Image 1 (cartoon, helix red, strand yellow):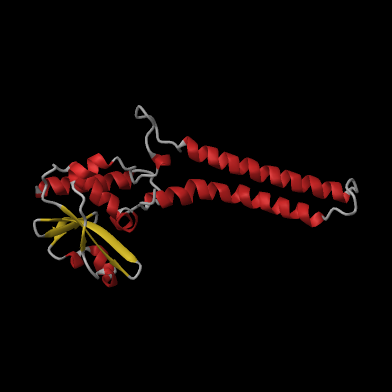
Image 2 (cartoon, helix red, strand yellow; image 1 turned 180 degrees about the horizontal axis):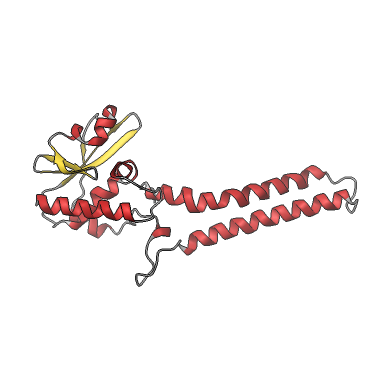
Length: 210
């Protein structure tokens, strides 16, 4: 079982390193920062239903780590050969304050396969049906496009209003400040929307928040 566990762990780790996930990972250390729970569940999902492998978790003072336990050794994306004490894992060597109390998870391979949960990869980076190239989910495109249209419309209304006030096409009771605020709000929406829908939301989902 130990070779199968290490092989599955290496495959999941290498897949994460090769994929354009968000947040981006360059090293196994990055994986343990963003995707440790995904790695543990994805590895367990690849093992037989009766595999004597458990998912463990510990954390404190702002750090939480999830890893695998089998036959007296602890495994994660940075420690494919396992460590006899979970505090010897590189994550806990960097953050010893996170070693507070180990909590065993109840997940098992069969339960993971039957759960039907979304993959940890952001949906915007999942493969299209039929194995086509990776692309952003149309839902994100629609949201981003809608926000862009809204922002551009507010900006246009504000700009047109400022022009009308400057050329005295509107009555003296119209405050030019209103159009300036609309223009600024439109600019903010246009600039922020791509960050929200193509960076922050995928990152939020990638950290296990569907």
